[in-house]
Length: 416
Image (cartoon, rainbow, N blue to C red; front, side, top):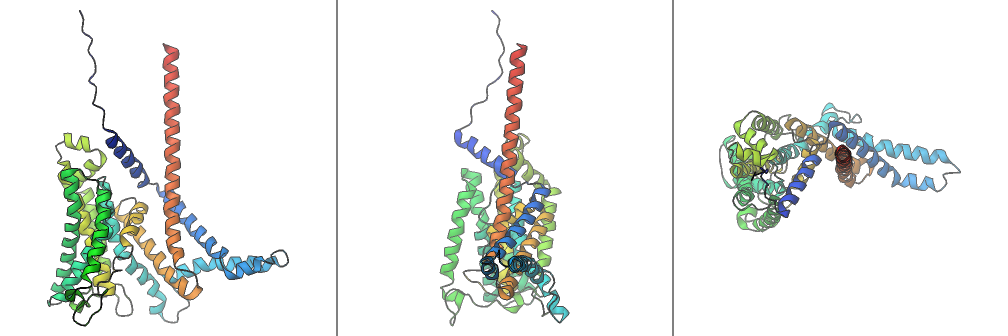
């Protein structure tokens, strides 16, 4: 009696695991668009934003009522509104040629870089976590906690200049790291879904800060709820271009953080383990990498970077803690990491782009009467266009794979 050897059959993975792996692959494709796709999405979004502005312009709408009688009025108003979108954007973000002094003319560029600081650092936090296959949606809360800790050190302690700033920055980094440690431990020890945990921690951080800003310790004896005491000048980032500009040392910190992330991901041993765990956890375990420990440390590092981002508004521009300190930096950072393709250089460029949109939006509203919400609309359109293009590409790839599989099956059947 002969025994026919059979290949070992792998146990079927649970449905939840298969769904999680499928979602991870889809999101990894979504976060790795081509450079051409990104460029086309940005260009198309800007054009769509200008069209929206032109369509809702009062002069365009009024001239549309007698379009066939005097078409030149309509097309002239449309061109003015359409071009005004780009003109205001450039004047508000790069160079304002209408100003009489050089300081005022170049101030828009400094505003772009100032507004880009928290976006760059928070985008780096997202990029680090996603490289390991983790979706740290809690950067918003980690940024807020980091800002609160850094601001508390800034107004509560009296330290020499330089040392005080360093203590505030380190405190913010530690605060964000501890807030990132919570989902890290839950992910590593219990297998908890980091998306759900970090989203919940965003709410916990927001309500915690809301409570702290009602306590005497934070608002002081003569303060009012919703705003903390002012940070001491010794704990503030110094302005690097003089008093005429708001650009502060935090921009240099953001560039240093980008260099650090590049070294961490590309040159360090931990970076190799992090990338291996994100690419294929099973193969990483086989190679002897402690995947749970790597994932936990990744979320800690991501949280530390998010906490560092919190120093930009608290120790850089606002000088105090408020309920709106975090703004939407943590959520905008997801788009920044998407456009930057999770690379440090790409994140710096994408963060600068978003800083330019925010700076230009302020001038749009003040001088051209264009609602600042158009900036948020433009950013959302960029994400939607990239998502749509990647979804189409994924669908075409699946159809191609299915056609090749069917062709191979037909060929095998004919050969048999």
